[in-house]
Image 1 (cartoon, rainbow, N blue to C red):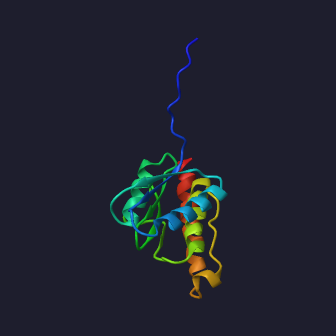
Image 2: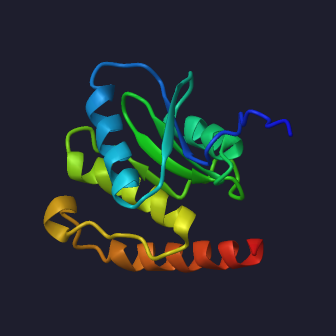
Image 3: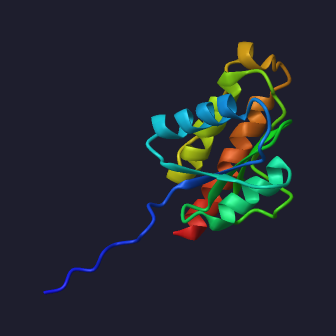
Length: 148
């Protein structure tokens, strides 16, 4: 009996990075967030903005989720969303906790479970944006259920 060698690629969230100074720390935190949630990732280099890179990753990923990183922003995208409408975008260039939460939430999008919300002290948010995240989570859950 002949055994075929498997060349299958493990389903992963694809992280596209536009090369820039400081990218290593951002990518490390995003990957840590994904890993802590049990979701593998693949790192690729590309040109464009974070939203476009994230959408490209989502289109290429078997898990239908991508992350984009450029010098100014980071983004999480889902294949079913319009290319210019990412699920999450962060322009926080200095807070590793925010970067890790993007990884957590990309993984949770794959798993179809509620997103992690940043503590207020990390975001400085007092505008009720947590309500927005709950609404987004509901929309994503509905999209995922349609997929099944």
